[in-house]
Image (cartoon, rainbow, N blue to C red; front, side, top):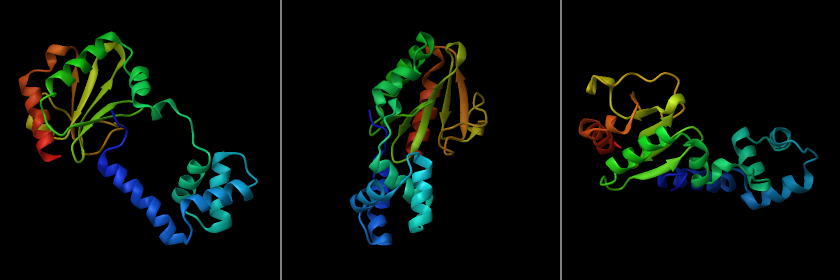
Length: 189
């Protein structure tokens, strides 16, 4: 299991490479500068110091501060994140059934996020989020009009590409027609 798709890894690599092009210094040199010269101890204040002292954008400053003082976060370990998220046996059964139902779809990359598990090809095409009471919400990258069970999502934390959601109460809800919707989303991803 990964936490970044190949497309995301490529994007982060380009951000890192453009730092040297845009500033004249590689990331390693910026890390040495901030560790040696920054008087601040708070993460946000260190970023602000880089912005004020060197005119860095907050994104660049965050990149440098994160390289200098990496945050230890359980969400960085996909297996640990998954174990922390999927604790309810009923929702875990739905996750397991979903994984089994889409296992034969080629080229799928599963990634773990803080509040959901996502599936991508080139881009994200599906995500499962455990809810209270052992149910799960499936987000899928097809329009809501594709199937009467689908509805428009409200305030979801996953990709805006996931245009529809469907509640899943138990493993039998993952039937052939639902898998066909997921495969349709995969085709477009």
